[in-house]
Image (cartoon, rainbow, N blue to C red; front, side, top):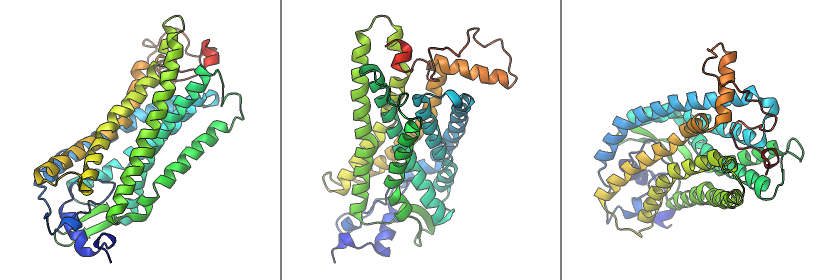
Length: 365
């Protein structure tokens, strides 16, 4: 049988010697190069992970829970009148919260080892992928909804059955669960007897990691980004032909959220692409390069996690309507009224918590 089709324990030992990041989508299977290129010593990347990842994960955990908790509170306070965009946002908040809840586990994994068993390993790894895909697909849904409303003056969700937006969200979650199946099946707590350390890693042949990386790149990043780019390019073209700056402001927040998504996840995918080229033999193997690549993977992975914290900040500092609804919520909780804007946030013409991201028919488009 071909050595690429066999995954035995000796292969696993070589793999675990060369693994340093706190969480990876796949095991770095390099056993096929063991005879011509021995495993690299990755002391630098291991020390970096142990020193910085627990601190960064803890910070993202706190900020992500507080920020997304505030967004969820504001949206749920007006759940009876939620627009389609707000509904997508609420589901996006759920996805972000699911991710940050796993970060304490990965912090312990980075600092010590994986001590939570295979069950939590599968669950935590799957939640990461579910959040990744859900965030991209939900942002694509929002952009498509805005595109239909503004470019074609079509209210897909408002004029259709009330459950249509919920059905769309269910389809998105179903696709995310489908894409996360490799994590539920192949992730497990693998013990390295040589180093006496347990890792949460995928346990599949080398071809599996290439397929998984390709799926993440295409379905979880490139296709949603292309949908967003096309929709907002058409929307901005329409808005530029309209009179006044108010209509341009209607897209400011959503565009910033999409830009934040691209900036947070692009570096990670570039690093993964380089790793894939190394595994396929397109790039020459070099221990110094691979050590720096592992550090880059940890840093860009944290940058991707930070995306969970950025959306609430954008809502708070860019979304005028969102700020007004948040102050109303603070008033209900007994906070001082002096900082609240005097005008009422409940406008008959604006119904979205995303400030200016309203339906075209309500904004005068």
